[in-house]
Amino acid sequence: MEFKNLIMERRSCRKYAASAEAAPIEEIIREAQMAPSWKNTQTARCYVSKDLAKFLPEYNQGNTKDCSTFILTTFVKGLSGNGVNDKWGAYDLGIHDAYLILAAKNHGYDTLIMGMRDEEGIREYFNIPESEEIMSVIAIGKAGCDMILRERKPLSEVMKEV
Image 1 (cartoon, rainbow, N blue to C red):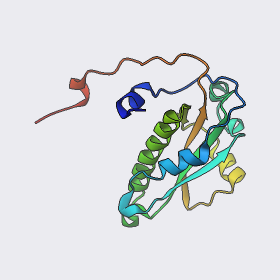
Image 2: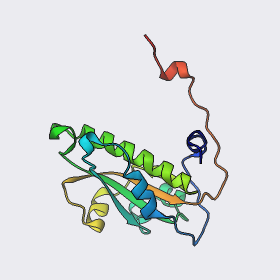
Image 3: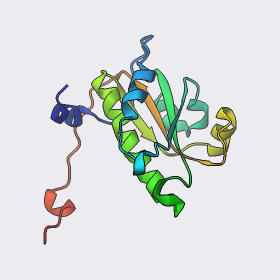
């Protein structure tokens, strides 16, 4: 898909179609790995499960009811930015996650990025070490409804030129 079309068509999906078709998760994650990171530290980590809804608030359990799978993303703390702070790790993971959702869309799958979750339960479920910062739960599947483009703010509100 052409990049401009890809970014114009990607939306947060809050209703998935029940489908037995599984997303090509390994390929999507492999493509997300191409995201740049500070000094190529590649601190992003992905944990994949079909069973993460139980760690989400009730409204997101409903939003993701029929998604095909979940990807939990984390980053290894203290590596990006010479370990001075973890802002670069979070920044790098944001770029990684953007690549991931665009790769999913390019493969014909829709996504929802969620931050609200039972972090302790997820850490225990996957046995995630304390050296990793849990950031996002990303649902992936086929949309079960039309997704509309919400109005964007005028450029004058988001850009300043001096």
